[in-house]
Image (cartoon, rainbow, N blue to C red):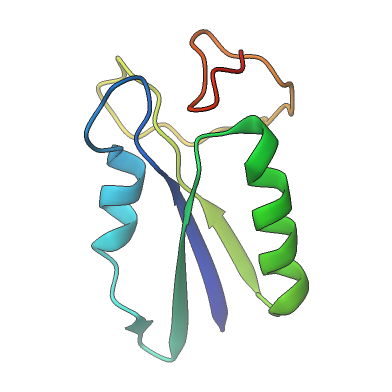
Length: 96
């Protein structure tokens, strides 16, 4: 299986983003599965183009997107993802 795992670059004046730190801990090969890792910019305007190009140029059986939600005390998988271009704080391009 060919798997893509994404995480995000730091934002909000932070030095690291735990989502990317978690992704970097994965091995490149787990059993018979190849793991590709992609660090995404924390930018509403840039991320779509990068992820679309990556998905168009590779065949992935699974894509796992890792994110960070500050203030949570446990891993909490999203049950519903809604693509709305707004956020509590600005992204790295100062878009909110």
